[in-house]
Every structure is written in structure tokens, then in C-alpha cells.
Length: 405
Image (cartoon, rainbow, N blue to C red):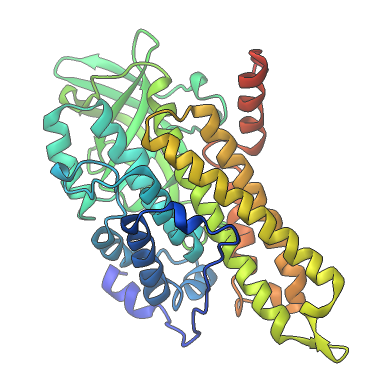
């Protein structure tokens, strides 16, 4: 099925997106007019383009690829990279706010933007040559190219240093062999940034054009989470990659880990968007739903749930705002980003679960976004560093002792 046929088959529903912004501590006063303008533009786009179709896409496990054009027009692909390469050149707080709004729509939509910008465009910009930047970044920024990021392997997830994917020198090319797993966008990608060990055992990054002979990307089916996102493998069988595709300015795990820090930062903001959407739905439902002669919101236990939700959302908003200012000043550490990702994802998942209770039986239906957010967040809790791994990163940072080994 072509992209146009797929788009035509997606059902748009008349359901109104009634989301209201929740800002209990007036954090908007800390944002610039430009930051709020970018956030509101994405919010409006989500309301018009994502909300009417996302439940159908999730239900049928369809990736709404036609949204790529809109994401590009919003500047959502690598927004904080320089305008020279077709990017928006925003600050990092603006990037975070954009991810917040995209994930309010759906984690899969935000994932598409995160992978493209933070895991594909960022390493090409940070570690690539100017020729590589000019060749790939404008096309990735415009959505002409779709990218994916190959680090996780079937037998090596949280321990990427043990990867077995490798490159071997063969004249003017490298011979690439190995496999990667759980790769967002790989079945539809035009280009992949792949991490592999060279013959000296050093981890290197290499740009792989997906039409290269010996490169395949089987789709992973049967997902019960992130169903509106496409996920696959990357399989390399004696694929010949020109040496000019090697990212020359990085060697070792610091390359992929720096990309992950960039993406994890976006996730910290994105998960907050999902939490806000669940809270907003629960608050509205509790005010409208009548039981025992009064609204659900009038019962003490419901108010307890709502009060705890907005408290945790406010704490997460303050955390992400401060993390954004640290990122903008170049002072944020990977450990601080890990704390933000871990805290905000588990906060969002907890809020989704509480919101589901407030909705009662209706909370498991696709008339409301709660169950979709909850299922998506189960994946967000695991990818780009599991909940427990981020806990150990914080533990190592505060004690100075490495508990990974």
C-alpha cells in the first residue's frame, strides 16, 4: 500500500481535542514569547492533524507516515540544529516544549521526531564532516529522508559495549556485518546511523544508505505498545559501505551515548506531555460524570488522585524547565538528563494509571486517550535507557561507585 493509499484509509473522527494547558505554578512566565509560540504551534498542529486520527492508527497498528511532512514544516526534526542545514536553530527549551506537545498527541509521533533529530541528525552534525552534513541534514530536516539509529542488538541492550556488529577494512569500503533490534523507523528509513566495532575493537559510527546491497530491515509485528509507530530490525550481511560514510570525529561509546542524552532530554519533556493529557482528560471526566447524585470530582478520593496528579506534573514541569536552561547554557550533565527521563516517565505512567481509574470502564476504551498513553509509556519506560539503568546512573553519580559491573 502506498503512503497515499494508507493516508486515505486512515479514519478521521469528529472527536474534539479539548485539551487545556495546565500550569499550576505559572511556569509560562519563565518562558520567552518565542518558546511559547513554538509550543502553541505544535499544540495546534497536534489538535488538527494527530488527535482526529491517532486512535484509529493505534487500533490498526498504522504508522501515519503522511505526518512527516507536517513535522518537517513545524521544524520538529532537529529544531536546535543550525539553520544552515535547513533546521530551525532554536534553543533546547523550545525543542523540549515541541516534544512535550508531540507526545501529548502520541508517544509514537514524538518518537519519530526524536529519532530523526536526536539520533540521526545530531550525530551527523556533531561527529560528521561538512560534506556529510550537507548531504544528509537538509533532506532529513525537510522529511525527504527518514532516518533510523542502530545501537541495540538482539543480545545486547543495556550493555552496548558488548555489541558484535562490526566493520572490516576492505580497500575503499568497510564490510559491515551484524544485526540491530527494536529500531524505530527502520522498515521505512532511507538512511541509518549505525554503531559497530572496528577491527581494533573501537565503537565507530557509520552512515548507511538503506538501499545498500546486504542491508535489510524486517518489520517487528505484534506490538501492544507504540502501535502508531513502525519498528523493525537492521540486518547487515557483507554490506559494503564507502569509507567516506564513517563519522570521523568520534570513537568509543561516548558517541552513541551523547546521542542518547540528547534524545533522553526530549523524552523527559515528551512524557510530561502524555501526563498532562491524561490529567486533563481525568479532570474533565470527573467534573462531567455523575455518581450518587454529584460529580466524581466531588468525592474525596477523586480529589486526592487529581491533587496528586497536578502536584507531580508541576514538579516535572519545574524539573524539565530547569533542565532546559542547563541544556541551553551547555551545563547539563548526562546524569541530570537521566534523572529527568526516569522521573518524568514513571510520573507519567503513574498518572496514566490513576487517570484510568477515574475514567472507570471508559478508561480502557479508545474514546479516551488514557489506555493508549499508558501502553505507550510502558515502552518509553524501557527504551533509551531502562528505568533501572537510569536509577543506577544517578546512583553512580552521587556515590562515585559503578554498580553496572
